[in-house]
Image 1 (cartoon, rainbow, N blue to C red):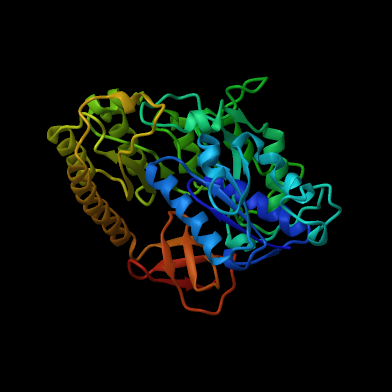
Image 2 (image 1 turned 90 degrees about the vertical axis):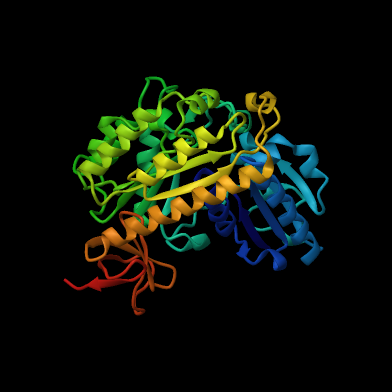
Length: 428
């Protein structure tokens, strides 16, 4: 059985897809490009209309290029519009997010997906685990510790596609970390749909800080982690990035100096309309504090342009703040109507050409911020991890650099940043 997994969207989807691949490989399946695969799993996103469109186009292209492919679709678009997805060519099964844990057992045992002649493993979905760096092209391991969201941002459909918040118990997280580290992974990215809400629904109640402290306490573990294992914290809502979280990262032992703190807007009026529970003053104070304490830290963000009612003055506040901010990279999202959200019914929709122009302007600002940060790091020495064929390294502060060939994937190195895009590995 030849398979392919195609993933759209967030790190949570990436983590889920990595699990699909691990289980399929362990069951005896063989990875192949989509155009050559017997089975294609498409893990979709639905954060914008563009994400929906991208999934549809990809599914149609796979069916056109590989008419024999059986396509299984999951993820947020499949959850939000299952009937629409099920009508696409070659789609044999649509699986909601809540059913992702049983996706591979279903595939292994369902003859509508896998014929008897193609059966692999024991046919009961209980295949053994197979894990190593480089699997599915991933050098760092993405570990989902939480899913679901109870926040009600007025523009966001994800609470209805991911459901209520659910966290993985700390003991279970630690056991998975031990397994991943034993398999040889040197970097683990912690992710969740609303990562900052980790543990609030557990009994007894826990928190993200408790989890991070447990991960950092290597010496007290029955099986201490290798010292080279580094944790990278994925996207955190600004109100969840507490002083305790910043302290743990600033200590510089267990966690990468890398933050992703979605701003969404710099106008308090727009933030209120978005139902975001903070002000631009709070956000600015937070990232300024991080920059003061960690001049080398990467601080990324997301912003939305063209939200309903966004005036020229609102947009100017956004552009002005970004230009003077300590942010190092910014993802720009043109506002997209999501039926079922509060924002869909709002008046004052911004014309498409205006949204596109505002997006262009903010992307220019974002490019300048990225260049400024890269230039500020030239001449410094950072720890890093080799990627792909060993000729690329990702630093702890999230700079991707070219290095001289001759190394293998997944090596911990110290690299001097020679230019904005090149590094020199130091010996000793």
